[in-house]
Image 1 (spheres, rainbow, N blue to C red):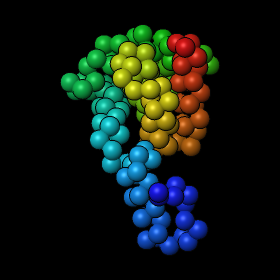
Image 2: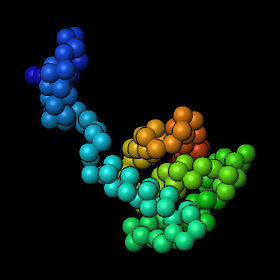
Image 3: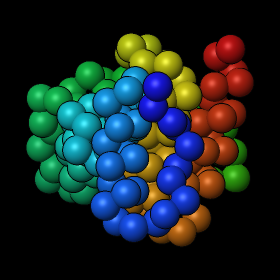
Length: 145
Protein backbone atom coordinates (compact mmCIF):
# COMPACT_ATOMS: atom_id res chain seq x y z
CA UNK A 1 0.00 0.00 0.00
CA UNK A 2 1.27 3.47 -0.89
CA UNK A 3 1.89 5.90 1.90
CA UNK A 4 -0.09 9.13 1.71
CA UNK A 5 2.43 10.76 4.05
CA UNK A 6 4.63 13.33 2.35
CA UNK A 7 8.23 12.05 2.22
CA UNK A 8 10.65 13.60 4.69
CA UNK A 9 13.30 13.94 2.00
CA UNK A 10 12.39 17.13 0.21
CA UNK A 11 14.28 16.53 -2.99
CA UNK A 12 12.40 17.69 -6.08
CA UNK A 13 12.34 14.16 -7.49
CA UNK A 14 10.93 12.61 -4.33
CA UNK A 15 8.21 15.24 -3.95
CA UNK A 16 7.26 14.93 -7.60
CA UNK A 17 7.05 11.14 -7.30
CA UNK A 18 4.94 11.49 -4.14
CA UNK A 19 2.56 13.84 -5.96
CA UNK A 20 2.27 11.51 -8.94
CA UNK A 21 1.60 8.51 -6.71
CA UNK A 22 -1.00 10.43 -4.72
CA UNK A 23 -2.72 11.68 -7.87
CA UNK A 24 -2.79 8.19 -9.35
CA UNK A 25 -4.07 6.58 -6.17
CA UNK A 26 -7.41 8.29 -5.93
CA UNK A 27 -6.02 11.05 -3.70
CA UNK A 28 -7.85 13.58 -5.90
CA UNK A 29 -4.99 15.97 -6.40
CA UNK A 30 -6.12 19.04 -8.37
CA UNK A 31 -3.73 20.53 -10.90
CA UNK A 32 -3.82 23.81 -12.80
CA UNK A 33 -4.12 21.71 -15.97
CA UNK A 34 -7.38 20.06 -14.93
CA UNK A 35 -9.81 20.59 -17.83
CA UNK A 36 -12.56 21.77 -15.46
CA UNK A 37 -10.21 24.36 -13.97
CA UNK A 38 -9.16 25.50 -17.44
CA UNK A 39 -12.84 25.78 -18.48
CA UNK A 40 -13.58 27.93 -15.45
CA UNK A 41 -10.62 30.19 -16.28
CA UNK A 42 -11.93 30.62 -19.82
CA UNK A 43 -15.46 31.42 -18.64
CA UNK A 44 -14.20 33.82 -15.96
CA UNK A 45 -12.08 35.63 -18.55
CA UNK A 46 -15.06 35.88 -20.91
CA UNK A 47 -17.21 37.30 -18.10
CA UNK A 48 -14.45 39.77 -17.27
CA UNK A 49 -14.14 40.86 -20.91
CA UNK A 50 -17.89 41.30 -21.14
CA UNK A 51 -17.86 43.71 -18.19
CA UNK A 52 -16.33 46.43 -20.39
CA UNK A 53 -18.30 48.56 -22.86
CA UNK A 54 -18.48 46.97 -26.29
CA UNK A 55 -17.85 43.49 -24.94
CA UNK A 56 -19.53 40.85 -27.06
CA UNK A 57 -20.71 37.92 -24.96
CA UNK A 58 -19.29 34.55 -25.87
CA UNK A 59 -21.63 31.62 -26.24
CA UNK A 60 -20.08 30.03 -23.12
CA UNK A 61 -21.30 32.86 -20.86
CA UNK A 62 -24.76 33.43 -22.33
CA UNK A 63 -26.54 31.40 -19.64
CA UNK A 64 -24.64 33.19 -16.87
CA UNK A 65 -25.38 36.62 -18.32
CA UNK A 66 -29.06 35.71 -18.68
CA UNK A 67 -29.10 34.98 -14.93
CA UNK A 68 -26.93 38.03 -14.04
CA UNK A 69 -29.73 40.12 -12.47
CA UNK A 70 -30.64 37.31 -10.05
CA UNK A 71 -26.97 36.47 -9.41
CA UNK A 72 -26.06 40.11 -8.78
CA UNK A 73 -28.98 40.40 -6.35
CA UNK A 74 -27.61 37.43 -4.36
CA UNK A 75 -24.08 38.91 -4.42
CA UNK A 76 -25.45 42.28 -3.26
CA UNK A 77 -27.38 40.63 -0.42
CA UNK A 78 -24.25 38.71 0.66
CA UNK A 79 -22.04 41.83 0.57
CA UNK A 80 -24.35 44.78 1.33
CA UNK A 81 -21.46 47.16 2.02
CA UNK A 82 -20.12 46.58 -1.51
CA UNK A 83 -22.44 47.67 -4.33
CA UNK A 84 -22.01 45.33 -7.30
CA UNK A 85 -20.79 48.19 -9.51
CA UNK A 86 -17.98 48.91 -6.96
CA UNK A 87 -16.67 45.32 -6.80
CA UNK A 88 -13.48 44.80 -8.81
CA UNK A 89 -14.43 43.49 -12.26
CA UNK A 90 -12.26 40.38 -11.93
CA UNK A 91 -13.76 39.57 -8.51
CA UNK A 92 -17.25 40.11 -9.91
CA UNK A 93 -16.52 37.74 -12.80
CA UNK A 94 -15.34 35.05 -10.34
CA UNK A 95 -18.37 35.65 -8.10
CA UNK A 96 -20.83 35.49 -10.99
CA UNK A 97 -19.36 32.22 -12.25
CA UNK A 98 -19.33 30.60 -8.82
CA UNK A 99 -22.78 31.92 -7.86
CA UNK A 100 -24.16 30.60 -11.15
CA UNK A 101 -22.67 27.18 -10.40
CA UNK A 102 -24.03 27.24 -6.83
CA UNK A 103 -27.52 28.55 -7.61
CA UNK A 104 -28.37 27.45 -11.15
CA UNK A 105 -26.01 24.84 -12.59
CA UNK A 106 -25.54 22.74 -9.42
CA UNK A 107 -23.36 20.10 -11.17
CA UNK A 108 -20.49 20.25 -8.67
CA UNK A 109 -20.51 20.08 -4.87
CA UNK A 110 -20.53 23.53 -3.24
CA UNK A 111 -17.12 22.92 -1.64
CA UNK A 112 -15.55 22.31 -5.05
CA UNK A 113 -17.17 25.43 -6.52
CA UNK A 114 -16.00 27.64 -3.65
CA UNK A 115 -12.48 26.14 -3.65
CA UNK A 116 -12.19 26.77 -7.39
CA UNK A 117 -13.43 30.35 -7.00
CA UNK A 118 -10.84 30.99 -4.28
CA UNK A 119 -8.10 29.57 -6.51
CA UNK A 120 -9.20 31.84 -9.37
CA UNK A 121 -9.18 34.80 -6.96
CA UNK A 122 -5.66 33.92 -5.79
CA UNK A 123 -4.43 33.74 -9.38
CA UNK A 124 -6.23 36.69 -10.95
CA UNK A 125 -7.38 38.96 -8.11
CA UNK A 126 -5.59 41.10 -5.56
CA UNK A 127 -4.45 39.98 -2.12
CA UNK A 128 -7.89 40.67 -0.57
CA UNK A 129 -9.82 38.84 -3.31
CA UNK A 130 -9.69 35.27 -1.94
CA UNK A 131 -11.08 36.29 1.47
CA UNK A 132 -13.75 38.50 -0.07
CA UNK A 133 -14.85 35.78 -2.53
CA UNK A 134 -14.87 33.17 0.24
CA UNK A 135 -17.02 35.39 2.48
CA UNK A 136 -19.55 36.27 -0.20
CA UNK A 137 -19.91 32.70 -1.46
CA UNK A 138 -20.09 31.35 2.10
CA UNK A 139 -22.99 33.73 2.80
CA UNK A 140 -24.76 32.71 -0.42
CA UNK A 141 -24.23 29.03 0.45
CA UNK A 142 -25.73 29.50 3.94
CA UNK A 143 -28.79 31.05 2.35
CA UNK A 144 -29.42 28.11 0.01
CA UNK A 145 -28.72 25.34 2.52
